[in-house]
Length: 131
Image (tube, rainbow, N blue to C red; front, side):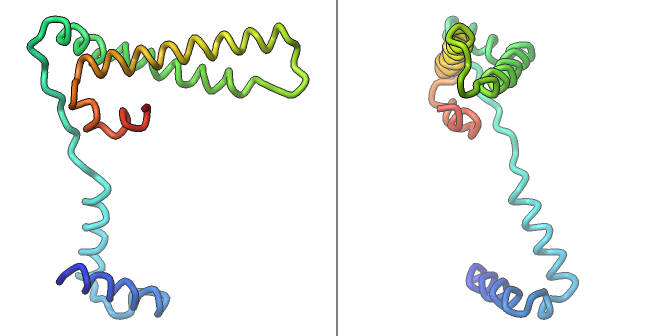
């Protein structure tokens, strides 16, 4: 079983403080395996046939939509960083309204993507992170 061998070799490396038991080819193989695990193919979403879902698909797949959402993420981070102890009530209310705005934007984004992608929505790890 290659998994057991891999664990044994890793345990030996950990105990010895290095890769004393590995040949150069084996070290290169380990590096190649780690790189291949790190990089996975990008899944392309299937275009829906329903006209409403197609419009939502076109919207959420558009470059400017992604730029807008990224801008909202950055702006929301800045707004959250602007809070401090003892802030004025008006100032706090303004920040709270900004937070409500961003929550609405991100909720609408998730709804639009769910409409556009359907079950495929959950194939993208970033979408799972959003929920």
